[in-house]
Length: 117
Length: 111
Image (cartoon, rainbow over all chains, first blue to last red; front, side, top):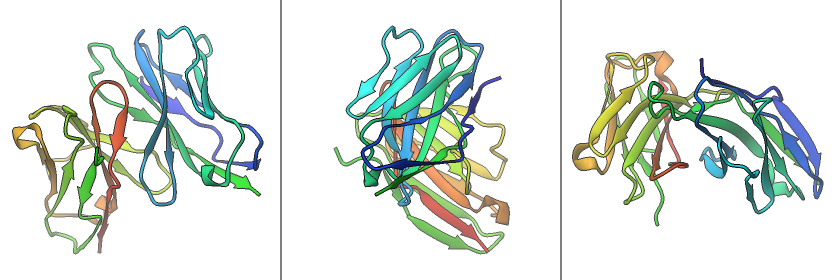
């Protein structure tokens, strides 16, 4: 079964502090991609960061980094130096790449992040 | 790069009516996805196109839903005989390699 689990419905962080949003996944495919998206109140999903299952190093994009622990099947998002504009819903997603799983993306239920001034 | 666009942004319809949504992907992207998102949930996969071919459909997609992508450019999603349970945000995304880029969505309200 393919599944993404985000166990933190809501998180608060002080402005300029770092925050970690948790994500665990389940797949039997040896090859897969992991993604994080931000969804502000306006509703548009914004791509943040990507990690391939065979990538040796953790992905980084500006203030975003992905803490990939393959053995634990976790792909936590770390946001450094939080800004007020980071307040949004954050979704973790996975795309297995096995021959039987096709091209579906699987999303978690999201974490609502609030940055406090 | 104008991004993914979707029209209309909002649609209110009465139960039993048919509705059609349009998605214009990023021009060089050959992959196109439709999702449905309800309040408090992540997007749920509905269907996937590679160029003009519809390669996958979710089991969630009832016979009332149909999608097309003629000529491999824009795509339409039609819902026939709408039900109140169809009320949701319908998201379109396009992709070239790995990551997907989403449009702003069409919010459907069925009264």
